[in-house]
Image 1 (cartoon, one colour):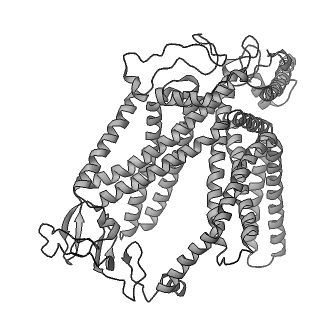
Image 2: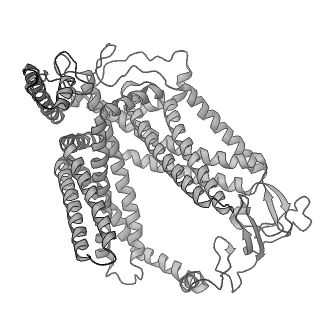
Image 3: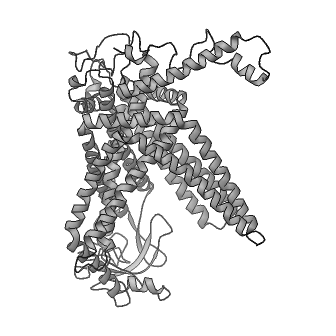
Length: 634
């Protein structure tokens, strides 16, 4: 497993050939099978981190009692509903509150990380309190609004939750049916992405352009009708702004029109990979199961940590459990552990999908593909746990920085400062920068996992190559991230919308249902999760096919080194080559013209020093105009 990396030799001896791939060659012949363990140091750091977490939880368990958080404790530190032992230096503690199972909260202070709650253990909640919520009786303020009074009143709250439970009990079969429908719609969506990607993308772009132009015309029409009124200037500003946006959208669509064909081809290839490897669709289920277990374990550990401390009486006479410095560190340690492990689970899913899709892409004879998903799982667990730990560590650190910054922001807003406006502007700017950097880091790590799946190198080398690959194909990346991501979002929204309308038709005439939105809302949430799981796999397949496509164009030339890509992508390459040959012909004709034949000095400078003149090689990740046509592919 992952610990085998600490053996006497990290280099793996080549095994028997599989899937038609050659090994031991100096040139590239597909996914590298001769691998070594990568980033072992970070795997050791992760294991040491888990050991530190275990010791911290042991320290918290020795000084805490989880029942304090589950049942609550009174002003003397005694847990409600249990016999208690006296606390040191708290003479009034040690009461037997077995029959007093509820905590009547009289006041509380949540401004600090260690909240101070003043309450008493009671047999039942008083009439001026809410019904028991997690064994707590909350005060209902007389200044609350009418809706809040109804919701929090003893009859209203009980009626609401009781009716909620009754509606769900009546409609649970319909909710299950709707979840199955969302599952079927998600599968149909992956098929539509494969066969109708081009039409869907062009319809989206045409609708976007027409919508922006129509909105611009409508705003100018409103401005014409408001001439001479007080709102004329405002409407003109809106119309001008919308006009600028429409022009920008039109220019972007015109600039991206040729690259939209690549996006459609990538959608088709991703659909083929999912069809060839249906086990890819199961990967989000394992990831979701692991994340659910992680959330439950984190919540259990957090309850122990929050219950730990030393009983201390405040000036008001209330006992709270003061945490020492080590317990405060363990609190943040547990939060960071949840962030790191959750990102590690997601990284494992991405690497497994990337490895399987890359194996499929670089295998010429698909009938000899074998089981690429199982092979990718083996590579991830045996060789690349250290790289996964490294990448997930970077993202977890970034998320922790954002959490700490949000905490400091709340502290500054609560403080009385004369520079509140300046502080607000600075915090908003910093939050925006941190968010953008986190998204950039997530994208870089995701593409680094693809390079790891292909070459089996360490994280830093793979991230550098992924960054170079994306930089040299910037316009294609923009097309994929803008058009492709929006298509995927529309797919999720379409599944949820269909489930909602089908749910309304199923439940609207069902007798006994009071709140029809209750089961529909639950079904819509599950439908979104199911669609997100399927589309997240499809999105990673698209990214992997794109990186493999760029690698194929970088390494092979279509002559003595034939391409691995499919015929659909080869057709896109042929069109690009024809355009480049035409451009090269124009450049040669331009050079043969006598000096001064053109009167535009700017274009003379551009053409005379362009990258496609004779003797200057084409830039990387593009296609040489002298490559043979598609018919010569072997």
